Length: 474
Image (cartoon, rainbow, N blue to C red; front, side, top):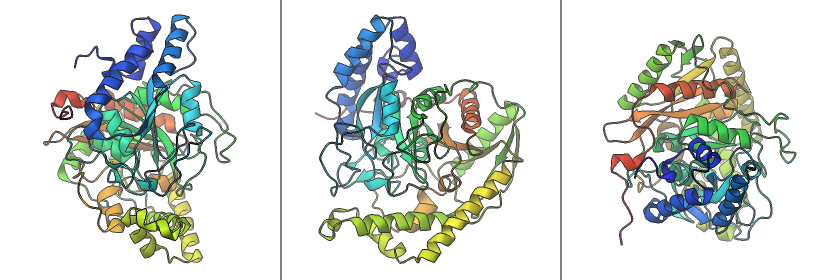
């Protein structure tokens, strides 16, 4: 691969070339499709491909040739996670229990991308109903990490993470109820954005509606902000959708972090595990922010135990899924869903309401914390990506020990958090950190992520350069 290969380009690079008529959307899409044909047989990032993508690219090309691009993303190849509605396609949610009939409407995030001219390449795989972090599901099997096929891309936005790392287009929609954007972004060397709750509207709401959001997964922070600009638009179908919209979130993104106060946080009412290489990545990011002029120190937000709160929210969602699945179809579900439902499903209404009150207490604790600190810096995952073929065992314990201990607190508090890569470990796998800001200060989270990205000099998200991506056999 060369740096002139359109498949390796960012969205901003593609758009600049389109504007100069030095590259067409059709040429860019064909380069991406060639890469999909070479690598997807073993990456397994797609639930479905869009047969109309080439026609859409041709329509975009005609608009660029006429000097009338449709919007911010005209002609940029993009994908949609299969938890979201894409009109003309079924929403299977990684499950053999779901309806295979196509849906008639786009989800708000998808509608935003289409309104700005993005070319939808296809739908990406997800863990079943987005329930876990390992990147497999009963319907589509195992999705693999382009940096190393023996490793998982993470989940639940497994296909989006793998597609981003494999350069199957620059823009990918994921969803995140406990880390499902940020974890695969960390494992795959991408930027993953969990926005403030309500910033990107959702419809229909799923099992995790009280904590779930949709957001961008990209190879650069500026691309994430560009994509965010298309997605963060008010939609009447979502009653908690924020009323404002129409902003270019790249504005101010390069203003830096000089003078901002940053807290390194190691506790969310419990102390999440972190391996030595994750600790090294965290210390590196802290140093980079300090060198950029931020005031960085360790601090504790003194919030209640996020494990106890999120495990109940998650457990109730699994119990609802289990009970709403016809009994004759329950054997088709991922076995772990039934295990969590049976273990956590006996919770009383009083217990659940108590957990929700604790969620509000955690949000208040973070709000007070942000009176002192502009930003929070944490690890993103306890380890690098683990074995893709490992069975899922003890899922309740795995949730807060192995999968999402660093991420789910920010879903409970509903504040923005971004996973940003800082380099590779000794095995050549990506490592990342997480930056978070106060509720609705998505702009500050973008600025911090951009500052880290600009300062980090190690390879971030081009797996082809590592030599680990191989064409499929045969």
